Image (cartoon, rainbow, N blue to C red):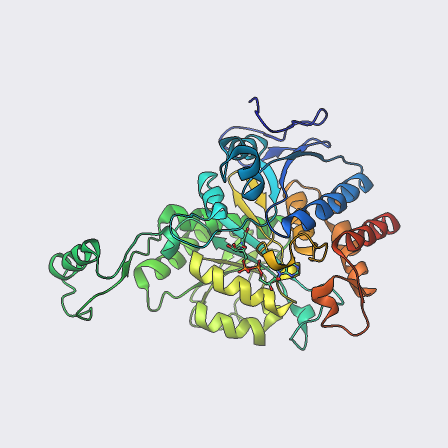
Length: 423
Ligand code: NAD
């Protein structure tokens, strides 16, 4: 496709799909990768992360050819709109991209650009690896026990936006239908009432669980835990669990994936699991929030509906030091859009202060998606070396007496030096 306001890099090749309709990308050693720096602190962390990622790629014999795209404020300046078509199309065409945070203006009529991107590109799994980096201040006694990856369904559940405001005709019509046609005549209180739908589909549940199991197999993980509240919401959350277990039972050989029977109600210690198989189990969401803190090292990959995923991944992130370092990515079929968990933190914008670690580690996740595991490892090691040696940005410095506070760009330079040293 030809672009109007995007500079297409002169060198580099496109990432392509190996066979249409099947999973698998053909990744050249010099790919073109679209990047959106983002709003607010995006202008600080974007260029810093870009530098670290290209340094790590070069150190492992590869070359990233960046294709700068625009969304949010930078797009309003260039295109007079928030999310230009050519930004979306460029990500679609190049399969894999990375973005910084985008501001969602408060007020009616503004749709979140992040949600719009995820929906338009059908990026159905929000993936957040949560692991401890030596030297990061944490409220936990043993933060190093955390090494978990959460898969959050990204397209449905109560986030589908099918809801009706209290006092409107629509809300009353839905109430009438539910009471009179569906027979729930004594369930809702009288007077104004807000109502919403919680769609959980077979398609949405199964493809998410499949993605989590495939990830566990490819990354030598032992266990996938399906987290839901199926004891109460039987036909939505409970059904998610059933469909998830069906995927585990029916789509993989027994020696590869073992669907643990009755795991909701019984301890699994006694179960005989085939060696090297990934165990798939179910857990209730409320209990899971406790166990994540009390039995952190027992969990590995978690797969869950949208709302559970939202709560659980933030809680997990807090255990290993919080927003400035929490990476993420959105996966679809043969697609990946990496983005940090944090937002645009407008108060810190443009001051060369913000912590670029989350965006850098999101880049690590993107590289691993491309099969560049050695590049990903190098990034992790260099970031950890930098933080543990006491070179940190303001957010971590204020929690550590022994650390030297540096700006965003100086911190990125220190990581690049460590990449050179470690490679
Ligand atoms: P935020 O993540 O921007 O900030 C929350 C707190 O964390 C602030 O105190 C901030 O200073 C700190 N923080 C965040 N990232 C940091 C970093 N890299 N280094 C140091 N400190 C950091 O959340 P918010 O204030 O709720 O949201 C601000 C804007 O960002 C809103 O418009 C929101 O819609 C948007 N947002 C975007 C995304 C995304 O692009 N995926 C995600 C969340 C929020």
